[in-house]
Image (cartoon, rainbow over all chains, first blue to last red; front, side, top):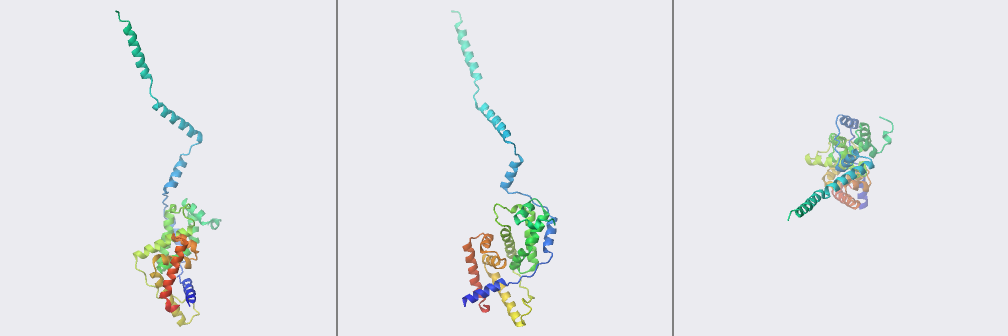
Length: 103
Length: 184
């Protein structure tokens, strides 16, 4: 009995009526889209990928830029010894000068 | 329409739509409008409303083509079924359910008047009872019985695993069997 009920219900579910759509429905949708602009907002990741693609440079250029940046960083971070040498020579000179004072 | 468009699969057409191709959009619309209309009709039981909802879904796709993500969505139809279902459910939340068409045509002209009347009553009651089912049970039935999706495809469209979908269908059928007892 239950099997028969199942079969009948399945048959009824498959036989549900649908009124036909207008024959020009697809055409109406297409025409409407033709008058509308697209919103080209990209999600974050594709947008980032596209951004990097825009600034794509050949590998040697990246190497040159990296070396220059590294050089600048090393240059700025190395302590300047010139001033201390001057101070050193000045103090030696004053010592020598002190020796020449007449007794 | 240019030769070769019907040979392109949905994913190729969507990639072209993302580049602004009206021809690709036209091909996709002609290919799938009918089946999405049928699905929408199951929910709203009214031709004009179903047509409006399908039109709305396709226009949204045209306006925001980037919503289709080939890396995330496995199949266009599965993804778009979900969009149409969501639009239908939104519509139902905003509107009161429409009464079923009183002038429902006979399913088979060879039937006698009595048989036809019984069939019409059956169909009306079935639609009424389906409309009264919980949303997810109704969607499971619509996708599996009416759209001919496999259980796996329907599960994907609903974002469920296979067992959960089968359970929804079983619960829906149990409820319908109980409520349609007089006709079964």
